[in-house]
Length: 102
Image (tube, rainbow, N blue to C red; front, side):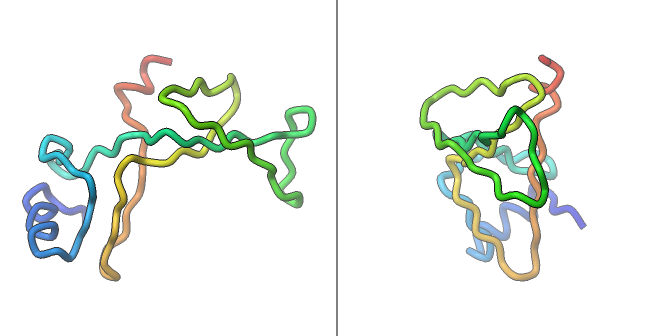
């Protein structure tokens, strides 16, 4: 079951869900918009090839902006810290409006 905005607000008020810092405008009809932080991990691949049997080495990059290389990916932090109770789980998806930009 996906929580409604009302249920999200109730859980936050009851302190069974914590998202900090949080502006009320970030709460949508059935989601919470999280913002990217300033720390990114960019994988270092030998000749652009990754192997699932080898550990991945990452380079930490700090900054207000990060350009993801073509055919690449990064791990990123969020500005918000989210604390969930044992009866909830969460998933993170990119904003489709941003994804449509290319």
